[in-house]
Image (cartoon, rainbow, N blue to C red; front, side, top):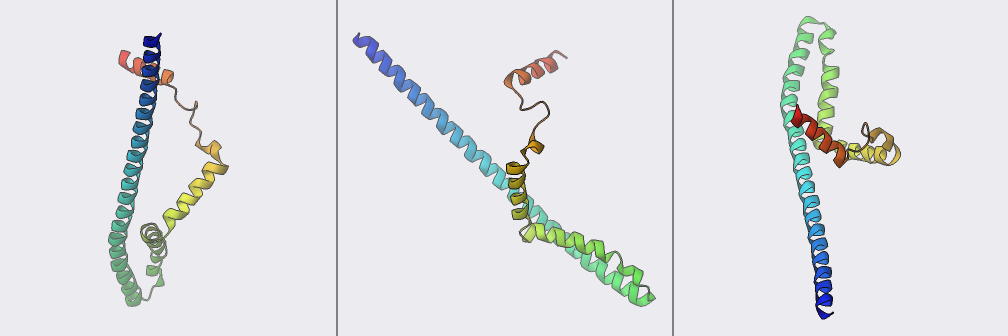
Length: 141
């Protein structure tokens, strides 16, 4: 009887310990995924800023060339390409230095809360059974 109680208590402690280890492992995995996401976002912002530098340089050279060509020839048509180039430059600058990321995040949150039906996967969320069947099918082929 005493042996039974000791074993029961030991089993209870093991279960609690295992649950705590699983919780800690899950918390670490969430923290790791968040760090990876943040690093990827930082890389994307840095890439956008680099693109603004390069495109800004191109835009400056193109603007000078198009304005001088327009003045030399008297044709205003040379200024036409500046309109789309300006929009592209401003879009990239907003992404790199503005609050475009905040606006995108807010829209994503709105979609998730109000329009979740757009986020559904075809055939629903994959199950372990479906993944295993697909793995076995590819292994056999």
